[in-house]
Image 1 (cartoon, rainbow, N blue to C red):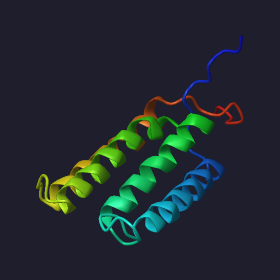
Image 2 (cartoon, rainbow, N blue to C red):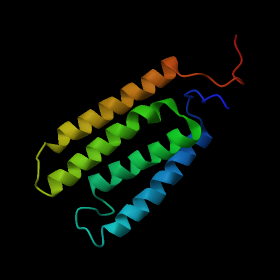
Image 3 (cartoon, rainbow, N blue to C red):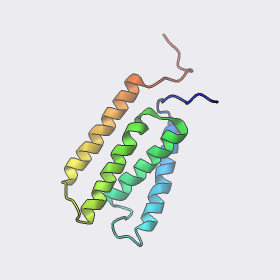
Length: 124
């Protein structure tokens, strides 16, 4: 039985993986936008849900610390924009963006402070 991997820090390869997964998700969501007017290539809901899907993929593959925090933030923000576009609920977009950006900033700070560093990093 293998030991579960610990959360780790970001690296260029990990960030590229998140970007690639997010672009694929964005493309698929944009195609869905052809049939569902709430999603579209330039809508905030599509962008945030795609970023959240990219974070889920990144967390599952690389265990990137901040993705464990930002995935729910991005998905909650994206769902709120979908509900707002459908006129089910209404929250000012500036509050949603502030919530998402503040949460993402805190997630990166927590990763920087607490996540396990790569073993290739040399101590001085």
